Image (cartoon, rainbow, N blue to C red):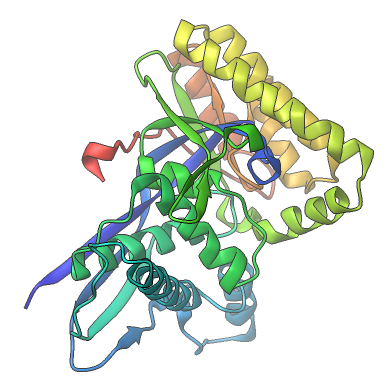
Length: 349
């Protein structure tokens, strides 16, 4: 029996987020340190197996409450289920348009997932599950979805099937790997098979300064809490939000130049500025702000890696990294794990 195993990795939003959902530009890095895995194999019926993250039995009410805080009310099985539906919808539409290579055999399968990506800290755990599921389905059915379209298809799982507010950034980097500059401006949109995608440019890892990541697993907040508020304000033409999105995009533009030129000081400044602009837009959880301020106090740059709960930044030397670990591990009520991320490139996906 053939067993298909595929992965979706955690990502770090380095610059420009959250403008990806508003025609902006971003830079992201994929890392191997945390990942979701999907196992799919031929079975006698179509079966979606619940993972430990979908369990509904608890030793105490505190266990139930903690599960809701970290996993939400629905777990990850809904992501797998929606991804399977969207994959079949896409392939059938391609067949109806007469495109070769999307014929599906009639063998059934069982699918299950696991993930060690900390939930609700902004490391793109949900989209990692969907990307891994899509990759497993492509292998099982022998279908090749064009790489530029894969992020768009993954995003549609969340925005169309599950009505979750999200942008393309996470899905692009989880599809492409490495370090990528993304341009989502309407003028940069490309069309393929009736779907749109942005312009995605891989950047060199060798000119990127040393990075750190820090997170506190109990300090997370679901991404939709932040993004839904921002989306509502944007649609109401809130001038503060409308003016901020082009500024976020410019941080990514300037960050691309800084990375290509090996300008570590400028990248440091831009990452700090990205966070400062976000903080001016919304009221952020005090514990998340404390993480950023603690990192900056020892000489590192710091910003949210996503929507909050995890931070990412640059540091100048080994002494600063050690001081960073000590300071963040000692934060009152919010001790953080700090590590140096390992990039995940397309060749290693």
